[in-house]
Length: 233
Image (cartoon, rainbow, N blue to C red):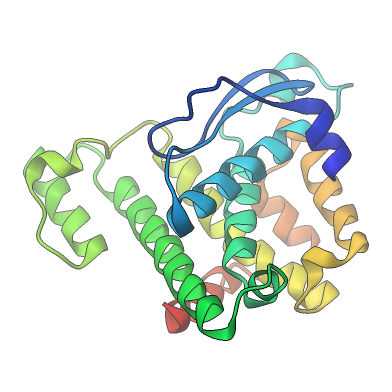
């Protein structure tokens, strides 16, 4: 899918985003991506997440109406983001980068921890709707397993909370489904491109839940996959 990325996705500016990657979508053929200004594993996971979301939008069919080409919830592209974030943490992908065994294990644990925290914060974001700031901080503390100041929860409660959570769960289940279809190194298998293209092409005509249903993937795969990641963190 490198050709699609090269022709549809462009760097938004020379200045990266201070935290997670951000997208500006003019049309599927013109997607601007601002990567995170973070180093190390954290930056790589968030960069992969942004790239996955961009890919999911770039693969949308150009024959659709503008409303369907830019779906509001964008659950499929969000799931693609969570999917590529997991690839960064996969030991097979890490070993191919020439890391030593100890370096691979450290990177894997760090990336797994990031994915876990992102998933827990996405769940907390859904639960805080309408809550006061103090209640939000309690949810954040529960997600992180630590005490937090009330101001740390000010970012939760956004209108995108539910789509973001659906994308996280969908990406976890999608990874497990593709692995079942194309083995552990599915991301090295060109045949894995077919179900991904099929998932993204309909744009707003589909959802990540429908995509998983077409693949025969049970919703519980998301939680099984998350438990697998937790064991590595």
